[in-house]
Amino acid sequence: MISRRDRERNAHRLQPGPRPAWVRALNESCDPRWISLDPDELLAEAQRSAGLSDFGGDGFREGLRVFLRAVEEEAQLHYVGRSLTRGDVLNLLDNRLRMTDWRKRYPEIGEVRVEKPLFIMGLPRTGTSILHELLAQDPAHRVPLHWEVRSPCPPPESASYATDPRIERAHREIRLWVEIVPEYDTMHELGGALPVECIFITQHEFLSEQLCGTHQVPSYAAWLASADQRPAYAFHRRMLQHLQWRCPRERWVLKAPSHLTALDALISVYPDARIVWTHRDPLQVMGSVASVLFATAWVRSDAVDGDRVLAWFDAATCAGLLANATRLRDSGIVPEAQCVDLLYRDLVSDPLGAIRGIYRHFDMELSREAEARMRAYLAAKPKDARGAHQYGALAAGAERAALREHFAAYQQRFGVPSES
Image 1 (spheres, rainbow, N blue to C red):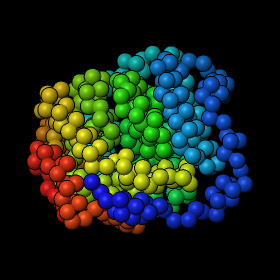
Image 2 (image 1 turned 45 degrees about the horizontal axis):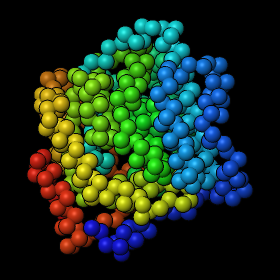
Image 3 (image 1 turned 45 degrees about the vertical axis):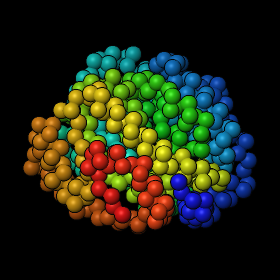
Image 4 (image 1 turned 135 degrees about the vertical axis):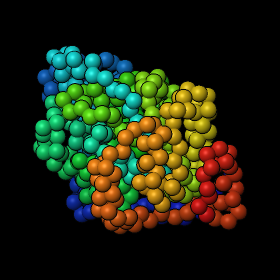
């Protein structure tokens, strides 16, 4: 276990710098209670605004109510944060209404085939983002971009995909996070035309770790951990059908660390899915993850508990997550031919070599154009171009050795080297 002294030291390191003046001014002069997060009111407002009433099923309502109750009782949002949360929920509800309406008017959307999608999964900070971005350079690949997931209606079209005015609007909206917490820019790149994780899709069902990551909501997180994830993946498939209807490519490439927790649900909806599991020394991951989680919640609250953040992603929890994913993998629920393992070390030292290995494993063609675009992307994206992500080690010496025991089976099973 991490000593109390180390935990307190690391909790202190997590806190970003001072708030920008405009955020402080709003939070000091406005009462958060002015912003209603009543679920019935939000549902009614979304219906009035869209002029529609059918959300495409009611299964999401339980998650909505559990989440909003947790926000009210646990998240301690400031005024700006409460405004952001209200806007986010209304956006999710609006998207459900409009997507349902589009499918009613164009039932052929439901016939769109989503074949052999490639899913990237692994602990956060194990190279999943850069791998996703590199694979997105292949013209044969389709990845969900922030703007189209945030505003999927009308469905995007190939002719205007790169110039759609929703790109700039989404860019301004997501970059607001950096305006509120400038340090976030060193942790994770945000932009309207960048690929997003699948949690941005599944949050429409209110079954998503995105909601846990952006708010301190332990009761919702506990509910989510035992919830059936299949409805979230069913909605995920509906979203992919909707997005590719008028803008198709050969295959989807998707990514989220949270797929580790729901591999069985993923395969139940996508039985032909191809899985790339990235692996890295978990002790190198944990400190970085804690700082990102703290900063993400700090966007909306001045009362983020650093000690709780560290405890939420502690060694026992992380090891349990890896053990469960390994158990599902070894159960044969996913045929080995549909899986490939990738060490973070290999991805960093030879990105194109690692990618060629993925293509060979899945018998996919890596065209010269795709490889050239990947090389150009790497050349234009030097490490720490937006500043170095600073975070402290969780423990040292004997305590670090004790923590490592949690991950011995995982590291041996997948040949994951220790980095320190």
